[in-house]
Structures are given as structure tokens and as C-alpha cells.
Figure 1 (cartoon, rainbow, N blue to C red):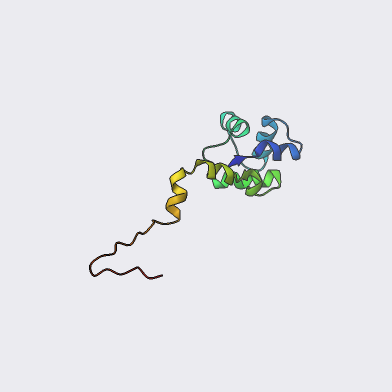
Figure 2: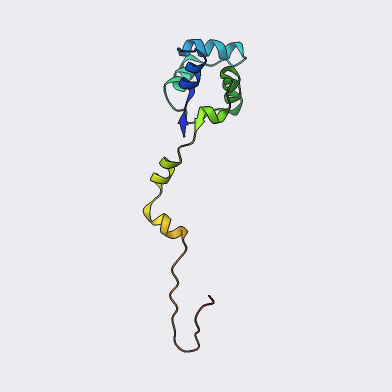
Length: 104
């Protein structure tokens, strides 16, 4: 997941975190300078849905424009053996006394 706050803010003419913080406060969301800095400079590890709702309102966007999925990164993290496991186990019939082939 990629956090796209700065790009969406720039599209609205907001170039500094202090300006974004002021607009959030006007919309009813008081954010500390430290929390605003973390939101502005990096990807948050967590964010309250209420806060995200206010950010989206201020930036006139939706959450999908702020949180961009990166499926290629997810696929790259998957272990190599996971692809084989998802196909199911290989079944080898053991023929012998009183055994038959599994159904087709």
C-alpha cells in the first residue's frame, strides 16, 4: 500500500504540512505537529477512519486515492513454495492389494 497524501495535497495547492494541518483544524480535526509530520513525510502504520474521512473531505478525494494498492509488491513477498501449495498437493496412487485408481 502506498500513502499518497502529499500528491493529493499538491493537487489542491497545499505544499506544506502546516497548511494541511491548518485546513484539517478548520474541518474539525486537531492534529499534533508530530502526527502531521508523520502523515506528511511517510506512510502511517495506522490511521483512524474518522481522521481519514476528514482528510478525504479536505482534499476532496476518496480513500482509494490516498491508499494506493500495490499488488506487485504483495506478489513479490509471497514465498516461492506458496504458489505450489495453492495448486494443491500432488496425489500419487499406490496400486496394490484392494486399491483402485482415484476418481478422475
